[in-house]
Length: 560
Image (cartoon, rainbow, N blue to C red; front, side, top):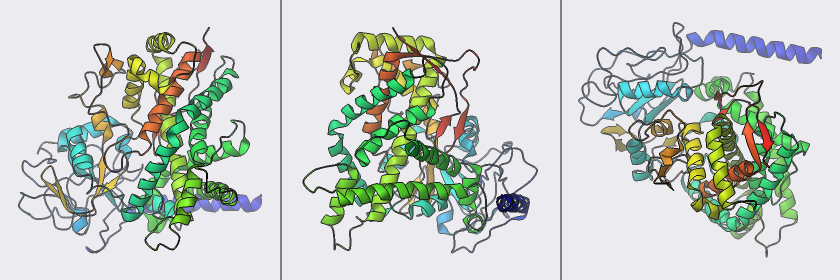
C-alpha cells in the first residue's frame, strides 16, 4: 500500500512539474526535419489551437495576403487563444501551404504560441468555432498543435474534391504517434501503400463473402438485446454497454466465429478497456502525447492506460488466433480469422506479401474497434433523440406496425419505411459521430482551391461543415427528418457523408447500415423510450475518437 501511494505521489508530482514546464517549452527543428516551433501562452481562454493564416513565409505554414482564400480581413479579431499570423517554426517543403499565384513575400517574423489546455481537435467540441474560422478565413486553413500541423478543409465541394476527385493523392494516413505506437503501421487504419492496399482488398472481399448470413446474425442479436432490456422492467437504465455488447457481438461473430453472453465478465472487461482506450486517445493526454511524443513517452500519466488496455486486448485476440490455428479446417469458409490464416498459408514464402500474424492481429483489432464504437454510438444517439422527440418516435412506431408488424425486421423493409430511414439519417447527421473524419496524408504534391499542398501534407476533412451547412440543409440546427424526405419518399442527399468518402471510406458501411436499421427498428418495435422523471435528457457529449453522448438513462416501456 505504501509503495502504491509513493508511486501515485511521484506520478502526480511529475505531471504537475511537466504542466508547469510547458509554458516555457519550444520544439525547434531544422528545415529538413519538418518539425515546428510550439509552446504555450498563458493569457488565453480558449484551448488548443494555433492557426497560422497570414502572408507567405519561408519554411512555414501560411496562407498569402490579398484576396486569397483564408486571409483574414484587416479588421478581423482572432478567436480567443488563436494565432492568426506567423509561421510554424522552420518546417520543410512538406510544412507549407501556398497560393501558387501568390508572390512570395517576407516572413511574419516568428511563431505565435498557442495554448495547450486541450487536445488539438477542440474545434470539434464546438462547431460554432469551426463555422467562425471558416467564415473568417475561408474553406481551407492550417492549424498547429505542438509538432502536429494540419490543413483543414471545409464544405461539401472542397471535401469531395479532396477525397473523391483526388482520392489517390489523399489515400495515405499521417504518422500519428499514438496510433503508430499501437499499430506499428500494420492493420487497416494506420497502414499505407502496398500493405494497406493488400489488407483492404482482402478485408472487403472477406467481409462481402461473410455477409451472406449477416442479416440473420443481426436479427438474432437484436432478440438478445431486446431480452436484456426487458430485464430492466421499465425502470431507468444506462443503455451504453447493452448496446455496445450487441454491436460488438456482431463483429465478434464475423471475426471470431462466436458471440458472447452479455453477462460474460471477460467480455465486459474487454468492452470497458476498449471504451477507455478510445476515450484516452482522444483526450487531452492523448493529444499531448501526439504533440510531444519524444517527451511524453518518458513521463507517467493517465495515457499509460492506453498501452495497458491495448496489451490486454492484444492478449485476448492472440489467444483466439491460437485456437483458430489449432482447429483450422481448410475446407470450410469459417470466419475472418480462418480466412486470414488460409491467406497466410497461401502466400507463405512470398516476400512481397504482408499476410502474417502481426497484420492479422492488427486487422482484427481494427475491425473490433471500428465495428463496435461507431455503430454503437450512433444507436445510442438514436435512442436519445427518440426519447427527446416522442412525436417522431410515435411516427416511426406507426410505420413499423404497418410494415413490419410483429415479425423480425429485415433490410428489405427499408424501402417501404421512408420515414424510419429518414429519422436514422437525420440522427447520423446531427450526431456527427466522427466530426473531422480520420486524417489523410498527401502522397504527392497537389493543388486544392488554388493552394499548393506539398507531399506529406496532413489533411483534416470537416464533416461537421457539411452536416450543418446552411446552404445544404433547410434547418441545419434542428432535428428534422424532413431533410431526407420528398413527397413522402426517402430523399438521398449528395452532401450526406457520415461514413466519409474516397479510398479510405469506411469499408464496413453497408454492414453498419444494416445493423443500424435492424437494431433501431427492433428496439422501437418492442419499446417506447422515455426520459426518467428525475433525470432530464441532455445532448451533452464526450469527445474521444468519436463524438458520443455523455452517460444517460432511459426508461424502455414495453409496448402492448
